[in-house]
Image (cartoon, rainbow, N blue to C red; front, side, top):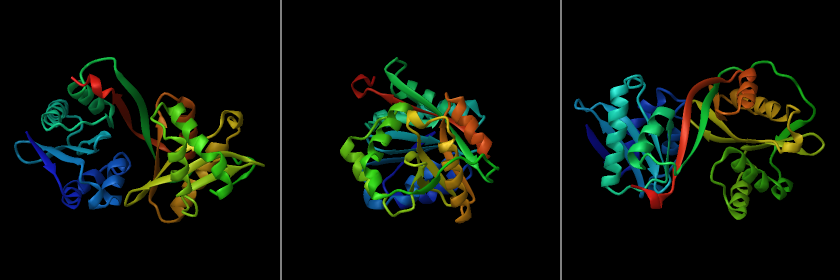
Amino acid sequence: MKFNRYKDLSVFRDIVLDILLEDEAGNNLPISIITDSKSETSGKWLMSTVTDNFDNIILIGLCALPHNVILSEPTWVRGSLKSCLASVEFLACEMKRVRCSASGVFARVDLADRFADAYFGNTDDKVKTTSVAMRLDKLLPYERVNGNFRQLAESDLSYAPAWERAFCIDCNIPSYTPEESSVRITARLGTNRHYIWEDGEPVSQVVYGRDTPGGAVINWVYTPPEFRGNGYASALVAEVSELLLKRGKSFCCLFADADNPISRSVYSKLGYKEVCFFRQIQFEQDKLK
């Protein structure tokens, strides 16, 4: 096997994009990163591939250091246990050799677990969250609820940052500071990206976060506890999904909490189908072996 590291984003994009597009919904995160980012922002990234003895790419690693490394395999490699185990361990060793300090890993469950053990060590100092990528090609009929949806407005800035932080707590993922959340959300005003369901007052939110060539990614789905159980989030996801499909997207996708059967069931009833299970693993850098 060979570890290949790239310095030029456009070169890396040309090499890996077609491979990632073989599973466009499952690979929505790395696809959106390499297609939306500018070359000047990627100077400190890890852009890498692992190739076999025949120069076939068997693993792709992407990391905006020092953040999480995102791992993807070509579809033909999946199911080949030997290739998975060997290539992931090889990449972990090479990253340590060249001192690439990733703060965690995001990948399919088997890849993430194997990489974490090889790179971080088999310890208990890892925070794990598991999600499932879900894809919608056609919206199914759904139950209508009270209220309607609208775009984010300036008046929503008084509570939306708090909703974002609450979402992070619910999902056990790193949160932004209040100031960072405010800046991020303010930037969405007038962009057709952030939507609110209103039933007399704001009760739920959805963000259209990322694009792939054929799809749109929905995230930051959040309803405060006092408004849950009324179908607001389901209706809002349905309305935004339908809107994106009408705009010309071939599909929509999202990540659902794998340990929350209720949310997975809600999305399934709208027509979302489970594609693949992913795991995000964080590690304390001072305990890196």
